Image 1 (cartoon, helix red, strand yellow):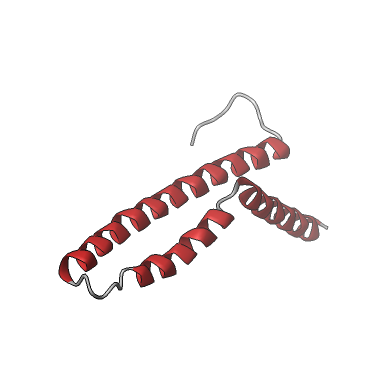
Image 2 (cartoon, rainbow, N blue to C red; image 1 turned 45 degrees about the horizontal axis):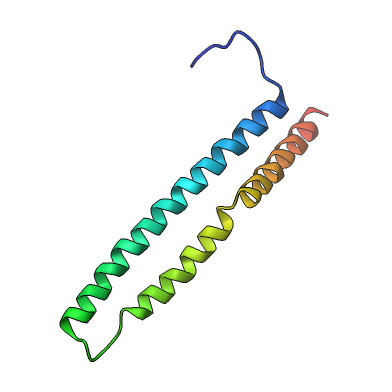
Length: 100
């Protein structure tokens, strides 16, 4: 553990927490999107190479696309920050209840 020369406020802690969570959410979404593109491109290639008369790759493309769309929505900065603020308030209420 690193020891800092000065303390930080709770507000600074929560803001840093939000920033880190937003970065992580965006990184995770980009990873999910890259996997979606790579794998579905491969599925489209296999489908068109082996059975051009039957187009089936659109089904996993559409199904997984719904998941990617939800991930994009919940990875937005406002969604992540709102979630962190809610969690911080819950922790604060729990600490106050425990204290008194």
